[in-house]
Structures are given as structure tokens and as C-alpha cells.
Length: 502
Image 1: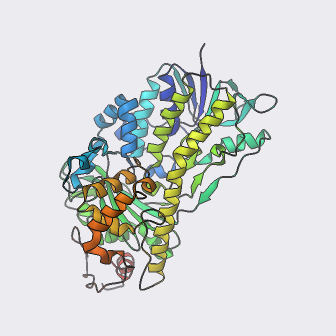
Image 2: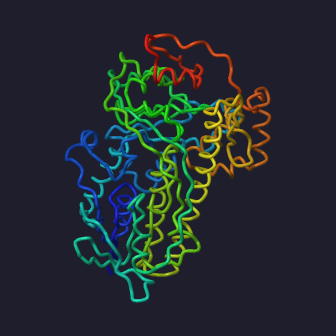
Image 3: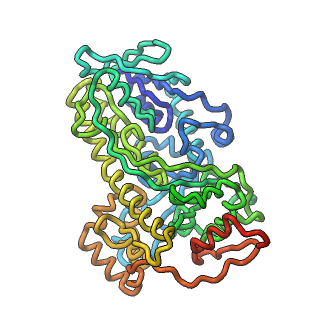
């Protein structure tokens, strides 16, 4: 019997789900409300592809080790295609401390990240989907509602805005932040649990660049897959992408009007020149800008009610990716979690037509179990960072240090311990790369003992951060050497809006 699915949404979550289902014999229709992308090779087409419905598409992104692992295991041809299109596999162990015990290298083969612009990865995925005869892709098609049984407990298909009725065994909401399944169910009279949300307190400014000499990297990647850092009042990070392209992103508190000027190239560049490890990446002798500065207010973290354990299941209806949960894009987890979820859902549907209420309930529960820890971690990290940044913006002499997990050790202490203890470093990086839940890693008494022993010589880092004497900002084109100190708040503002005559 032919099994049929409609996927509403043609971005990464929807395309990955369609590809995973097609590989298991499903006939899939992908209905995407956006216009089709430009023709041509992915790297070229990505440069002119406008994505108003995917605002994060124009910002820096990379694929976590979780996502790389999903592709390696389930869609290896897709990873091969991504690398062939210029994607850079970045070995995170390049910045690891030496291993005193062979066991400290366990899992090193998993510690890879993929540097690639999101539109390029999406176009590689789109090409793979178009090559599957089991998949039909329709652009500029909006799903307005569901076809349901009389008791609204089972999906029978969808209704599009132009009135077409498309029958299907399963319907998958991959509509991203719009999370259309909520409005579909509400229109059908089905009560939908409210989302659980928490603000990110962050806005970002991103600019893309190209190396003038391909392969001539201007500076070290002190973070393994990136260069830069998160400091006590802002963040600045370089993300290598496909080929000779890279992005620089500045993260600022969302309620900080003084930094709005970072939308302009000159203030943006001035702050980059002051930021440790970022400085060489804006050297005009080594790089050239590809874009202007793009600004985005990061969306709130959201755990959707559609996957809540309290939600009444509707057989045959599923949500994936941002339609199921949304975490702050600053942490880069969304695409990797969407790939994991797409493959998991396809596996769950493999032995069923997808119309069982038990299956709908089980899939929602497993989705909740996948996303909830990362939602909670994102909320914790956002709130901890916001407390630190707001204190510094308020001019407080000391600021609260963020803890690596609720009730855990301060992040600076863990980072200090990680510089000399491979096991601590591995725990920190596996959490950052979405492989292990930080609460599991840093809730282990043995890990806490290692952190305490390794960080004891730098125990001062555990104290609240106080301002220190810093040299004046040089006149003209101030710079920060790689590994130097970040600017103070006063220095940052002076770089953004220099006084006349300086």
C-alpha cells in the first residue's frame, strides 16, 4: 500500500523530513509558501536568494556535531554534497588540551562541525529532494487548514489557500516559526495547549566577508569552529562558512539603543577591530565584505504546545523543527535538532501509515523529550547572559557570572578548567555541540571534582567580574591583538560613535 505524506514547509526541517520519508518508500508532497530559489549552483544562488520568511537565513550559522553525526549516519550523500559545495568540516579537537588518558579521547571522531551558510546547505538539500522521484515540491502554495474526520481526531489531508484538497495519511507541520498546526487545529475547534516561551534578550548584527587569498586564514579559530568570544557586555564571533566565505556576528542586549548604530559598516568594523581574535578578520589587506550589516532581534525560545504531554493528539499530524520548538539561534542548535527530529520521525512512521492515535502521542512525547532539555538550556543561558550584560550596562562595578547549568559552577571556572583537563574540555564542547545535555555532564560529581581540581589555580575567576584598569583606545583605527582583552563598555561606545576630531 502506498503511504502518503504532505509536508507544509520547504525549509530545512521540511526538506529533511521529506528526504527521510522518501528513503522509506513514502510518496511525499512538499508545499512551500515561499517563491522558488534562484537557479544555478548553490553557492552562487545563495548570494541572491531572498528569504523574508526565514529571517535567520541571512545570518551566520554552522552545523553542530549533532547535525554532522545525523548526516553521517543517515544521509551521508548529503554531507558529501555539502563538502563538495565548499562546506568546511572543522575539527574541534584542534583546540583541545593534551589527553593524559586515552579514555579522554573517547568520542573525538564525533567532534566535527560543518561551516556553511544556511542558504547553501538548504539549496544542497533542495537539490537532493528534487532528485527523489517520490517527492513532489510545490512553491507558493499555502496550507490553510486540515481535512479531518468528523470527530477531529484523525487527519485526512490538507486544504490549500486556492481551495485544493490534498488527501494524505500524515500531515507534517514544518512551517518554522509560524507553527501553522496551531491555527489549523484552532480553526477545526481543537483546543491547543499554549506554547511555553522565554525571551532571548538578544539582537545580532552580521556581515559576510570573503578571503582575498583563498585558504589564507587571517587568524586562529580559538573556539575550534569559530573565533572570538562572549564577554561581560557583548559577543563577537567569526564563523567560517563554505569556501572562502565567513561571517562575523556581534551580539548585543536587545534593549540597548546605543548599539543600534552597528547597522552601519563603519561602527560594525570598529567594534570588530577591538574584539579579541576577531581583529585580523576585518583586515582590508586580507578580506573584502560581501554584504552590508544585517540586524536581527533573536526570537523568543519556545516549546510548542503541539508537542506538550497535555495536548490531545490528533492522529496523523506531526510538527518538526521550529514548528515543534525554537531555541535562540545564537547557539546554532536549531538546524541540527531539526535534522535529528526529521530522521527520528521518519523512523517512527516507517512501520505504520501514521494514522494511529498511539503513534501521534508517542511521537509528540519523543519530540518533547528531544527539545525540552535544549529549550531549558537556552533559557538558562539567555537569562544568565542577560543578567551579566544588563548589570554591566547599568554601570555596576561587579556583574553576576553565568553558571554552566542551573546551580552549577560558573562558566569562567569551567572554561579555565577546560584549558588543562581534556575530560572537562570534552564535556564542555559536547554540550555546546548538542551531543550531550550539559545538565547531565555537569551534574556528575566526578566532573565537578575534576573542575575544582583543574581550576583551583585560577579560582579568582569564580568571583564576580569587576572592571579593571584598561589602556586608552588608540586614536584612528583601534585594534585588539588576538587573545587580547575586549573593550570596556565605554571603549565600545566610543568606537561606535567616535567624537568629532578623534
